[in-house]
Image (cartoon, rainbow, N blue to C red; front, side):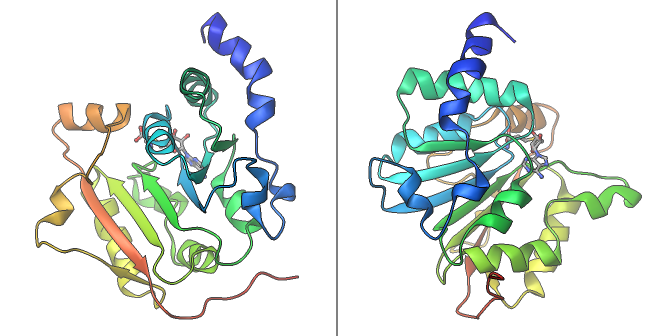
Length: 219
Ligand SMILES: C[S@@+](CC[C@H](N)C(=O)[O-])C[C@H]1O[C@@H](n2cnc3c(N)ncnc32)[C@H](O)[C@@H]1O
């Protein structure tokens, strides 16, 4: 980690770190500029996509989760350079944030190139599971978008099969080959570029939260 990044980890990270216990009933209150909606990015890596989205959507607040310290440090560089005040970072497991969020508070969730866990005995560690979809359904209102990208065909099939049996989400595709095309405005990420260079093009999936009730947060 470079000296500049170390300085940002010491000085800027405490300012932008999310405390899940502080989310309360209205997470938007954590953002002083009065954003209109909230989105979550899980496992932002170096933060290229999150910084890009935060820059493009100044009236949206973003929570990004990433336990990898070097990735957090890279995002902090973009936050400082772009004066991005609409990002809060949780430098750990996104599951803890999802569990702490109030019901139906997220307009969108992005899960981009999650760790593939390709071996048979590892697959249960994948971020997407039947229970995770229930947990996400709780924090997403009807019509909210869940975006998922992967370069691992087996992970795409794994996710589609869980979406197909979930009452809470529907795969949304306008064109038959939409899953082959990056979303409009996709800025690229380091991981995606490496996968493409290695001959693994991505699968791009968009799911919409159905009008079906999900379990409510326990008081
Ligand atoms: C393959 S990388 C992709 C990073 C980034 N999305 C990109 O496209 O470059 C997956 C990332 O997810 C992070 N990750 C894994 N499990 C996570 C979890 N439970 N919560 C948040 N991030 C997680 C890892 O640390 C890693 O940086």
